[in-house]
Image (cartoon, rainbow, N blue to C red):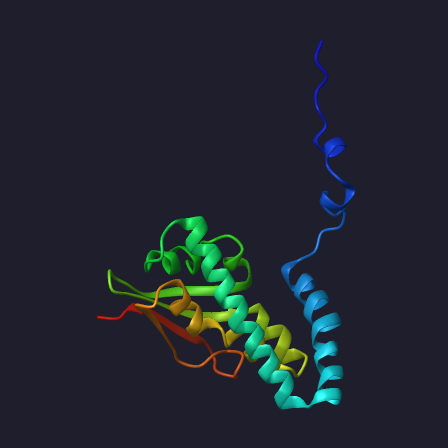
Length: 174
């Protein structure tokens, strides 16, 4: 008789699910408010505010480029449908941390309105919206170009900057 295999027995303990549930808000607060933002404030004392912002922007550009390469490689495409899939109100993961409404969905453009953003909530509550913008929002426009140089993004302000919502419109340049 064959033994039923226990998947936990073959998994390293570091790869097992945690035994405590976290909400998305708790995870973001733990990650950003408890660790990242205090580190940035400490770093600001050492190198100055503008240098921290510049460093975060460089990091955001690097991450945008790397994520774009990953998306294109794993999806096998680099057209507007990439954004329609990833920034859809029903996409798991993203829909858990953003509240998105589709404003435009055509062959040439995809426009969304974000009315809630967990990143903005956490960074603004911590008094670090400028760091949040540099780390999270700054790479959005270049990300579109990294996916496809013919795709552009109009970004009309962000919740992180204090606007009531973000309007993002991805479009194919003629």
